[in-house]
Amino acid sequence: MLGAEPAWKSCGRGLWRSLRRAAGGSLRALSAASSSARGAARGGGAPPAGASNVKPLDGVKILDLTRVLAGPFATMNLGDLGAEVIKVERPGTGDDTRAWGPPFVGTESVYFLSVNRNKKSIAINMKNSRGAKLIRELAAVSDVFVENYIPGKLAEIGLGYEDVVKIAPHIVYCSITGYGQTGPMVQRGGYDSIAAAISGLTHITGHEGGEPVRVGVAMTDLATGLYACGAIMAGLLQKHKTGKGMHIDCNLLSSQVACLTHVAANYLNCKIEAKRWGTAHGSIVPYQAFKTEDGYIVVGAGNDQQFVTVCQILNLPEVIKDSRYKTNELRVQNRKELIDILSTRFSEKTTVEWLQLFEGSGVPYGPINNMQQVFSEPQGPINHTCTGEEKNDNKKKQMGTDRSGGLTSTENLCYNGCQAKQDQHHALLINKADHMLGFFVLVSLSLDFCVQFWDLPFQNGC
View 1 (cartoon, rainbow, N blue to C red):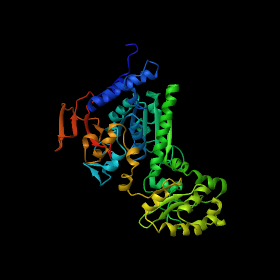
View 2: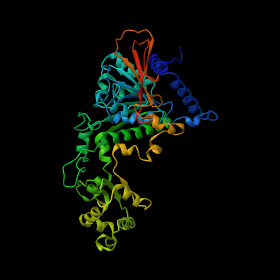
View 3: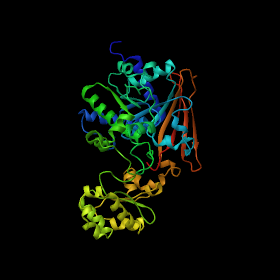
View 4: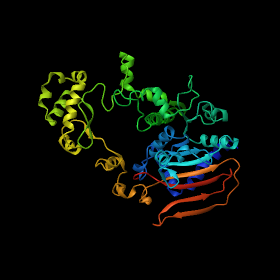
């Protein structure tokens, strides 16, 4: 029939619709709101009622083939902005991070949950020809395709950029790798600690004169994920302008080198080799942690007036008058003597006492918090929770308490190319408080695959 939709595209749309049906009415309502909002954006009339609740990426479909951290972190952030994310995992075991524990919430690792909210999960054997075909069908009706395989691996099974762009010229295809698409290291797997070491981050992290230290969280992975997230949104904007997609190449090494900023610039422009400074700063003094009577406080003096204020709070008038400390350049040159003086004074009071003295001073300062203190900070509930009535319920929504208010849907769809058809049935799991912990659904669809999905607890609130 003239103008009939290709079978592969029709099948792909059917899969997306099936996933929505499995997820329930909330996604259907979201889809309807997304369609209305897109119509208004094209000039189709006044914004619909409730349009203020539409997220920026509502209606954007993302096919996510990434694992572990950098890629999942990128797609999770896109999901937070409203995108609909299908996460593709290996049959049987899924994403490696599902087993990274303890700690676990139920059978899922907290690590996995921390970077995979707002997603539906489909397990596909991509080495099977039917599995690869299913990926192509989904890609054809997706807006974004994200993967983090070693360059060339997906092309071997017909899922590389050149393969996908033939059936989806609109696709924003993002490759997240360790070292890019070319060069002598291109076939190496990308690991945060290794890329951090090669990029120089580990070299500049640690105590002055001490051993190199790994950063406390995988900052190279996380920075790469943020770069990828921004690049994908730029790609969607380009697609909106031109109707065509693009191939984004985002890698751990380049991302981390870019984050070296002034440290790299110091070497490139002045041949100054970087060194480790602990909590201190190579170009600003004082700007570091000081040990107090019972903990630590970080204080920074970004200009000469702030330094004078610090000395006034510490009751060190003689330091203000000392010509060795009049400018930041002089303070850098006489770092050791000055820090010894300041450290002695900071050790005389508790952290709370110093915080009270610095309050309202205009000087940058803050305590070094542990996790319990982080999530007990008065500022925390303002920045870390949702808006409106959900703020009032935040205390109930701690992980492992009020599950009814702290759930995010992660649906798991399992397909291996040869699964027998299953009759539709439902099983609800109810806890002692009669709150639904999760539910499992098996459905029969034309491609003979098995759908299994459940609600997972969302960390610390909404």
